[in-house]
Length: 219
Ligand SMILES: *Cc1c(COP(=O)(O)O)cnc(C)c1O
Image (cartoon, rainbow, N blue to C red; front, side):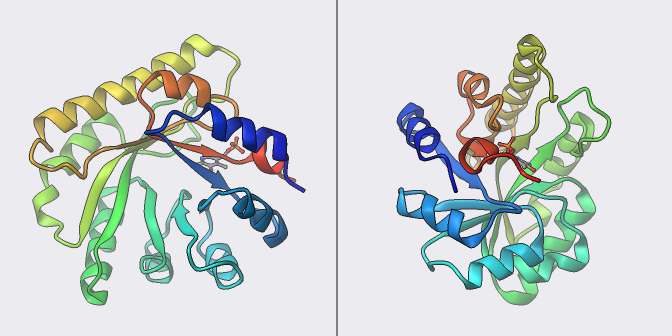
Protein backbone atom coordinates (compact mmCIF):
# COMPACT_ATOMS: atom_id res chain seq x y z
CA UNK A 1 0.00 0.00 0.00
CA UNK A 2 1.30 3.39 -0.91
CA UNK A 3 0.61 6.66 0.84
CA UNK A 4 -1.78 8.34 -1.56
CA UNK A 5 -1.96 11.50 0.51
CA UNK A 6 1.81 11.94 0.52
CA UNK A 7 2.08 11.31 -3.19
CA UNK A 8 -0.69 13.77 -4.05
CA UNK A 9 0.82 16.40 -1.76
CA UNK A 10 4.23 15.83 -3.32
CA UNK A 11 2.80 16.23 -6.83
CA UNK A 12 1.10 19.45 -5.79
CA UNK A 13 4.26 20.85 -4.17
CA UNK A 14 6.38 20.16 -7.21
CA UNK A 15 7.37 23.21 -9.24
CA UNK A 16 6.45 22.76 -12.93
CA UNK A 17 10.08 22.42 -14.07
CA UNK A 18 10.92 19.65 -11.61
CA UNK A 19 10.39 15.95 -12.24
CA UNK A 20 9.37 13.44 -9.59
CA UNK A 21 11.02 10.04 -9.89
CA UNK A 22 9.41 7.47 -7.61
CA UNK A 23 12.01 5.13 -6.14
CA UNK A 24 10.34 1.72 -6.17
CA UNK A 25 13.30 -0.48 -5.15
CA UNK A 26 12.24 -3.47 -3.00
CA UNK A 27 8.57 -2.58 -3.49
CA UNK A 28 6.00 -4.86 -5.12
CA UNK A 29 4.38 -4.49 -8.54
CA UNK A 30 0.97 -3.65 -7.02
CA UNK A 31 2.39 -0.63 -5.23
CA UNK A 32 4.08 0.62 -8.37
CA UNK A 33 0.81 0.26 -10.28
CA UNK A 34 -1.00 2.23 -7.61
CA UNK A 35 1.43 5.13 -8.03
CA UNK A 36 1.24 4.77 -11.81
CA UNK A 37 -2.52 5.09 -11.66
CA UNK A 38 -2.10 8.34 -9.75
CA UNK A 39 -0.07 9.74 -12.62
CA UNK A 40 3.53 8.79 -11.86
CA UNK A 41 5.36 7.73 -15.03
CA UNK A 42 8.98 7.78 -13.80
CA UNK A 43 10.26 5.03 -11.50
CA UNK A 44 13.74 4.22 -10.28
CA UNK A 45 15.45 0.98 -9.30
CA UNK A 46 18.92 0.28 -8.01
CA UNK A 47 19.45 -3.32 -9.13
CA UNK A 48 19.52 -4.37 -12.80
CA UNK A 49 17.72 -7.65 -12.30
CA UNK A 50 14.91 -6.15 -10.30
CA UNK A 51 14.48 -3.43 -12.90
CA UNK A 52 14.22 -5.97 -15.73
CA UNK A 53 11.76 -8.13 -13.87
CA UNK A 54 9.46 -5.26 -12.92
CA UNK A 55 9.64 -3.70 -16.34
CA UNK A 56 8.29 -6.90 -17.91
CA UNK A 57 5.25 -6.79 -15.65
CA UNK A 58 4.32 -3.14 -15.90
CA UNK A 59 2.97 -0.73 -18.53
CA UNK A 60 5.25 0.15 -21.45
CA UNK A 61 4.97 3.88 -21.02
CA UNK A 62 6.82 3.87 -17.70
CA UNK A 63 10.21 5.56 -17.89
CA UNK A 64 12.74 3.59 -15.85
CA UNK A 65 15.65 5.27 -14.11
CA UNK A 66 18.69 3.52 -12.71
CA UNK A 67 20.06 4.96 -9.45
CA UNK A 68 22.29 2.27 -7.97
CA UNK A 69 25.92 1.35 -8.21
CA UNK A 70 26.26 -0.26 -11.64
CA UNK A 71 28.79 -3.03 -12.17
CA UNK A 72 30.28 -3.02 -15.64
CA UNK A 73 29.18 -6.59 -16.34
CA UNK A 74 25.54 -5.55 -15.79
CA UNK A 75 25.52 -2.60 -18.17
CA UNK A 76 24.27 -4.68 -21.06
CA UNK A 77 21.14 -5.68 -19.18
CA UNK A 78 19.85 -2.17 -18.69
CA UNK A 79 21.15 0.29 -21.26
CA UNK A 80 18.42 -0.33 -23.78
CA UNK A 81 15.75 -0.19 -21.10
CA UNK A 82 16.44 2.89 -19.06
CA UNK A 83 15.62 6.49 -19.80
CA UNK A 84 18.41 7.81 -17.54
CA UNK A 85 21.28 6.34 -15.52
CA UNK A 86 21.77 8.68 -12.53
CA UNK A 87 24.73 6.95 -10.98
CA UNK A 88 27.82 7.05 -13.18
CA UNK A 89 30.52 7.18 -10.55
CA UNK A 90 33.77 6.36 -12.37
CA UNK A 91 35.56 7.03 -15.63
CA UNK A 92 35.79 3.32 -16.22
CA UNK A 93 32.03 2.88 -15.92
CA UNK A 94 31.47 5.74 -18.35
CA UNK A 95 33.89 4.16 -20.84
CA UNK A 96 32.18 0.80 -20.58
CA UNK A 97 28.70 2.30 -20.99
CA UNK A 98 29.90 4.15 -24.07
CA UNK A 99 31.42 0.98 -25.50
CA UNK A 100 28.32 -1.11 -24.87
CA UNK A 101 26.04 1.60 -26.27
CA UNK A 102 28.19 1.70 -29.41
CA UNK A 103 27.82 -2.06 -29.85
CA UNK A 104 24.07 -1.84 -29.50
CA UNK A 105 23.74 1.30 -31.60
CA UNK A 106 21.97 3.30 -28.89
CA UNK A 107 22.60 6.61 -27.17
CA UNK A 108 22.52 6.44 -23.38
CA UNK A 109 21.40 9.36 -21.22
CA UNK A 110 23.30 9.61 -17.98
CA UNK A 111 24.20 11.77 -15.02
CA UNK A 112 27.56 11.93 -13.30
CA UNK A 113 27.21 11.14 -9.61
CA UNK A 114 29.20 13.45 -7.39
CA UNK A 115 30.28 12.70 -3.85
CA UNK A 116 28.92 15.58 -1.78
CA UNK A 117 28.20 14.14 1.65
CA UNK A 118 30.39 13.92 4.69
CA UNK A 119 29.73 10.18 4.88
CA UNK A 120 32.46 7.89 3.65
CA UNK A 121 30.05 5.18 2.57
CA UNK A 122 28.37 7.15 -0.19
CA UNK A 123 29.77 6.74 -3.65
CA UNK A 124 30.38 9.28 -6.31
CA UNK A 125 33.08 11.24 -8.09
CA UNK A 126 35.25 13.71 -6.29
CA UNK A 127 35.36 17.22 -7.68
CA UNK A 128 38.66 16.57 -9.44
CA UNK A 129 37.51 13.24 -10.90
CA UNK A 130 34.42 15.03 -12.20
CA UNK A 131 36.46 17.66 -14.01
CA UNK A 132 38.84 15.02 -15.38
CA UNK A 133 35.90 13.16 -16.90
CA UNK A 134 34.30 16.28 -18.31
CA UNK A 135 37.57 17.19 -20.00
CA UNK A 136 37.39 13.88 -21.89
CA UNK A 137 33.71 14.06 -22.77
CA UNK A 138 34.19 14.36 -26.55
CA UNK A 139 35.62 10.85 -26.57
CA UNK A 140 32.31 9.35 -25.63
CA UNK A 141 30.06 9.46 -28.65
CA UNK A 142 27.38 7.07 -27.52
CA UNK A 143 26.40 8.76 -24.28
CA UNK A 144 24.68 12.02 -23.46
CA UNK A 145 25.87 13.60 -20.25
CA UNK A 146 22.63 15.20 -19.08
CA UNK A 147 23.75 16.60 -15.74
CA UNK A 148 24.73 15.68 -12.19
CA UNK A 149 23.37 13.62 -9.32
CA UNK A 150 24.23 13.72 -5.64
CA UNK A 151 23.12 12.46 -2.24
CA UNK A 152 23.41 14.62 0.85
CA UNK A 153 24.42 13.32 4.25
CA UNK A 154 21.77 11.46 6.18
CA UNK A 155 21.41 13.93 9.03
CA UNK A 156 19.00 16.24 10.84
CA UNK A 157 21.43 19.09 10.34
CA UNK A 158 19.67 21.03 7.61
CA UNK A 159 22.53 23.50 7.33
CA UNK A 160 24.89 20.72 6.37
CA UNK A 161 22.40 19.44 3.77
CA UNK A 162 22.05 22.96 2.39
CA UNK A 163 25.81 23.30 2.07
CA UNK A 164 26.08 19.98 0.26
CA UNK A 165 23.28 20.76 -2.19
CA UNK A 166 24.54 24.25 -2.88
CA UNK A 167 28.02 22.83 -3.53
CA UNK A 168 26.52 20.47 -6.13
CA UNK A 169 24.48 23.29 -7.63
CA UNK A 170 27.60 25.41 -8.00
CA UNK A 171 29.47 22.57 -9.73
CA UNK A 172 26.50 22.13 -12.05
CA UNK A 173 26.42 25.83 -12.92
CA UNK A 174 30.16 25.94 -13.48
CA UNK A 175 30.11 22.95 -15.82
CA UNK A 176 27.09 24.26 -17.66
CA UNK A 177 28.61 27.64 -18.35
CA UNK A 178 32.20 26.52 -18.97
CA UNK A 179 32.01 23.07 -20.54
CA UNK A 180 28.51 22.54 -21.88
CA UNK A 181 27.65 25.97 -23.25
CA UNK A 182 26.70 24.63 -26.65
CA UNK A 183 25.07 21.61 -25.21
CA UNK A 184 21.52 22.19 -24.01
CA UNK A 185 21.09 18.59 -22.89
CA UNK A 186 23.27 19.28 -19.83
CA UNK A 187 20.27 20.45 -17.86
CA UNK A 188 19.45 18.04 -15.05
CA UNK A 189 20.36 18.20 -11.40
CA UNK A 190 19.12 15.08 -9.63
CA UNK A 191 19.08 15.74 -5.90
CA UNK A 192 16.61 15.38 -3.05
CA UNK A 193 15.07 12.30 -1.43
CA UNK A 194 12.16 11.79 1.00
CA UNK A 195 13.84 13.55 3.90
CA UNK A 196 15.54 16.41 2.09
CA UNK A 197 13.72 17.12 -1.19
CA UNK A 198 12.36 20.45 0.06
CA UNK A 199 15.89 21.69 0.69
CA UNK A 200 16.98 20.32 -2.69
CA UNK A 201 14.20 22.25 -4.44
CA UNK A 202 15.55 25.47 -2.90
CA UNK A 203 18.97 24.71 -4.39
CA UNK A 204 18.19 24.14 -8.02
CA UNK A 205 17.13 20.50 -8.17
CA UNK A 206 15.36 19.48 -11.39
CA UNK A 207 14.74 15.84 -10.45
CA UNK A 208 13.84 14.54 -7.01
CA UNK A 209 14.10 10.83 -6.22
CA UNK A 210 11.52 9.93 -3.60
CA UNK A 211 10.95 6.44 -2.20
CA UNK A 212 9.82 5.94 1.38
CA UNK A 213 7.57 8.99 1.50
CA UNK A 214 5.44 7.42 -1.24
CA UNK A 215 5.91 3.70 -0.68
CA UNK A 216 6.57 3.57 3.07
CA UNK A 217 9.74 2.44 4.79
CA UNK A 218 11.74 -0.33 3.16
CA UNK A 219 12.39 -3.54 5.11
C1 LIG B 1 16.82 4.68 -2.14
C2 LIG B 1 17.28 5.89 -2.85
C3 LIG B 1 16.48 7.04 -2.93
C4 LIG B 1 15.15 7.18 -2.22
O1 LIG B 1 15.31 7.29 -0.85
P1 LIG B 1 14.08 7.65 0.13
O2 LIG B 1 14.75 8.15 1.34
O3 LIG B 1 13.35 6.38 0.34
O4 LIG B 1 13.26 8.68 -0.55
C5 LIG B 1 16.95 8.09 -3.68
N1 LIG B 1 18.13 8.05 -4.31
C6 LIG B 1 18.93 6.96 -4.27
C7 LIG B 1 20.22 6.98 -5.01
C8 LIG B 1 18.53 5.86 -3.54
O5 LIG B 1 19.34 4.79 -3.49
